Structure formats: C-alpha cells, structure tokens
Image (cartoon, rainbow, N blue to C red; front, side, top):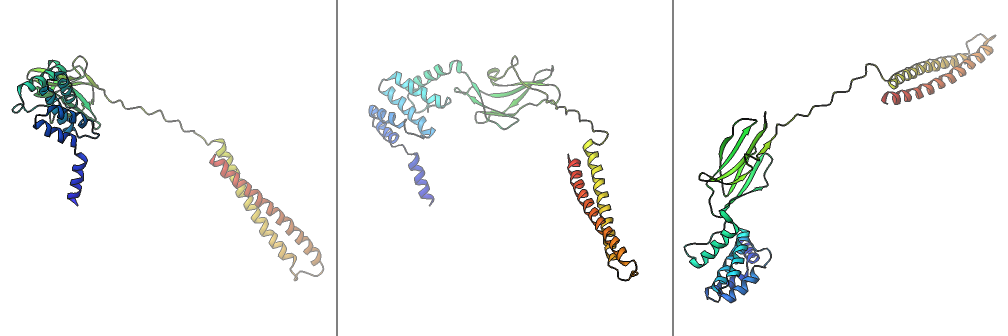
Length: 300
C-alpha cells in the first residue's frame, strides 16, 4: 500500500519536460534543452525546488547559447522566487557566476537586507529576513519606556526568521523597533528611533454609573399588590358564602323542624342558600379576574 502511495506521489510531482531538458543539457544540446524548459516552467503546481531548477538550468543554457538577455531574465525570475538562492560555486563556471552575480547586484543594490512581517500569533512579532548576500550577523530589539533611555536586547535569527514577543506597556507607553546588523552596521530595520513602533498602555474602560434603584415600588407593582389582595379577599368571601349556602340548603331540607313553621322556614332558608350561592359564584369570578390582573400588573 505504501509503495502505491509513494508511486502516485512521484507521478504527481514528475515533470517529464524537465527530465528531458536535463538529458539534452548533458548532451550539450542546449537549444533543445531550452525548448523543453520553456514548456517545463508552465507545468501547473510545479514544486518550488523544481521551479528553481528550471530557471537555473534555463539561464545556464541561455548563456551557453550566447543569449545574455534571456539568461538575465531567467536568473531574475529565479531570484524573485528565492532571493537567497545560490549557485554551486565549486562546480559552476566563472562565466555563469559572473552573470548570476551581476543580476543579483542589480536586483538588490547595495546588497540590501529586508525585513518582511509575517503572520504571527497575538502578542508576537515574526519577521522574515531577506538577505541575498548573507550579511546579517545579529538581530536586536531596541526599546524605551516613556522618556527613559533606549535599551537593546539581542534576538535570534533562526532559519532567516526573527520571532519575538511584542513589547507590552504596563505603565508608560513602550517605544520599540527591531534592527538587523552586519557587524557594527545596521543593514535592515523594522521601525527606528525616529519612527518607532508604539505599545500604548492599555486603558481600562470605565463602567457607566449604575442606575439608581427606585426608593419605592412602581405604580404598577402597587396596583398589582392591591389587585392581588382583592383577589384573596374575594376568594375568601366567596368560600364563606358557598359554605353558608350549603348549610342553609341542608337546613331547608331538615324534616325534624317543627311542622308549624317548617314550610316557611324551608322556603326562606332555600332562598338564602340560592342567593348566597349566587354571590359566592360572583365573588369567585371577581377573585379570578383580580388574580390574573395582579399577575400582569406585578410583572409589568
């Protein structure tokens, strides 16, 4: 299974035009190699290592054919991809090295070094050091707090990258910059004493004053309490009337009462029972409405 995956990976990265150009160059058939390389550089998803090889071999073949302008163009494209690319100075002819160095000097006058900021996690600074002539020897983080003196701290350059914590301000603002030196000479700078980066003191946002709590209950709360009390009172009165109505109703049907006044007493008791039952129903309904109103008003 692993061999199949490895074979597929090779097939995906293979560039037959580059392979053929290598063979033609070894046979000193430089014109034919150039034709293959012109096609090879147009292959999509070409890996960077192969792309660099294509332009390096193309420039060498152009020089062999006496095409100086075309060789300059090929070396320019190569150095645009990798400004720090170097030729093997032990195996490369002086004629080719002369052209390569001339192109490099033209693209990077004064042998300049550049610092390019890259993506970094919060609180960190990441700078890529573009150093075509390998001049950089040390990095420095230079800072001062408020009106204090400038202080210098050595920072490492690892794999052409400077990665440091961004200075933070706990009291006064911090002014800072990063520079790269070649010996005693500064060859590149990210900020400067005249135009430093600034880390401001973080201001703590003031919370708005809390709203004053009202000293008394809102009118709707008062109305809710009163309505609730009415609901309780109505429920109590309704319950009492209901119980009394039931008592009167039992009395109206009591056969043990004296025969002389039983009929009149029964009718009167029954009438009172019906009346109090009606009032009881009314009080219960009033209590229910009052209870609902109390809940609404208190929640408002």
